[in-house]
Structure formats: structure tokens, C-alpha cells
Image 1 (tube, rainbow over the protein chains, first blue to last red):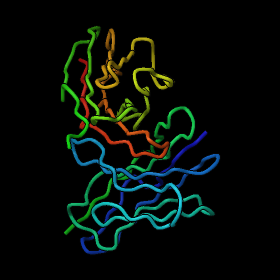
Image 2: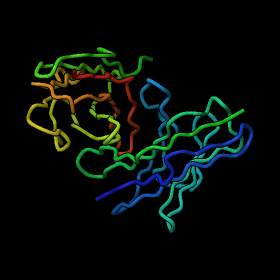
Image 3: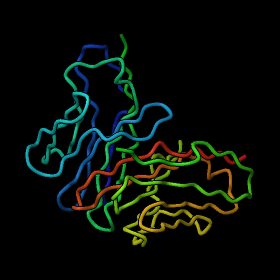
Length: 114
Length: 115
């Protein structure tokens, strides 16, 4: 069975510093990996995805993620954090069979302080 | 263009009542998904539609939960005889499914509170 783990419930970063939100996965076959962000009382917003190709994926709002097959990781990064980046971040892997439902990690709360 | 819409945004109901939650996907998207977000369980898959058929219902937690989709567009999730443990945010997503790797886009969710 496919699974995703986000080892940190919360990440605290000072504004202007780089941020990393960690994600590891377990899949059989090629992984299709996604990051979503959720602001308070809002739905999930798509940030970026890895399907194939370059290991460094660039997405919305200056975020990027690095796919590392040997470490089975897909960490989300941003060179310079903004206070407005404070939100709940979810990593997900897509089931290859059965219609492609998403399996989510437990989420990481990112707090960026001025 | 318009995104995924859901209604109502909030629903408060009494234990034992039936509720219907509605999802209007992005126009032209053939795949539609329902998920549930709760404090204890995180984000869980409920059901997947391709067109009007539901090839994957594996996430529905009990037979009190059902869903349908008509005309390949709007979907309704029905919960019968609601219980307090049904309280959660119900999220709908749609994707174009031109390829298996298409992105799922989410609606704002319906917050269900069962008293």
C-alpha cells in the first residue's frame, strides 16, 4: 500500500529565512507526488507536483520541491519565507490504480514570524 | 474560470437527521472525488467518480454514506442518520483525467457539525 509521512507537525521559521517542510513516501512503482496548502477555513490549493523528469519541481508562490528517489523524499522548500506563507501544508501520493485517489500525509503547520 | 464549488459552506444538524452535501466540479472535468478532513483522521478519501459511475467507493465509512453524480457534473454526498463522529469538513475535488497524472483541484469544503 502507498503511504506518505510528514515527520514534523509544526515548523517555525523567521521571515526571510529559507524553509523546508519534509515529506517521505512509500510506493510500489513510480511515485506521483503532490503538495497542497490549506489556509484557515479554506480548501486545499495545489502548489506543485512531480510526475517524471527533473528532480527539482517549481510551483506556485515561489515554492519548489526536490524529488529524491534514493531517500524516498519529496521535501517542499522556499528560499525566503513570508509571513503570508503561514498555513497547513499537505504532501500526497497518488494511487496509480483505482482511479488515482490521493493519499495524504498528516499535514505540517508552518508558522513564519516577522 | 470558475473553480470547484460546494454547498452549503456550513451545515449544523441534529444527530439522526439526514444531510446532503453538493459539489459542482470544474466544467469539463470528468473525474470527481470526495474526501473528509477531521481532527482525528486527517484527510481521508471517500469515493471517486469517473463520469456518472463510481469505480472506487472504498473509502465510504459505512452504509449510511452514499453519493451520486448526474449528467457527469454535479455530485451529491448523502449521510443518513448522522452521528457525532460524522462531524468533519467534506472536501470535493475534480480533475480533467485526460491523463492519469492530472491535478485534482479542491473546493472550499462543507463543514458539517452534528449535535
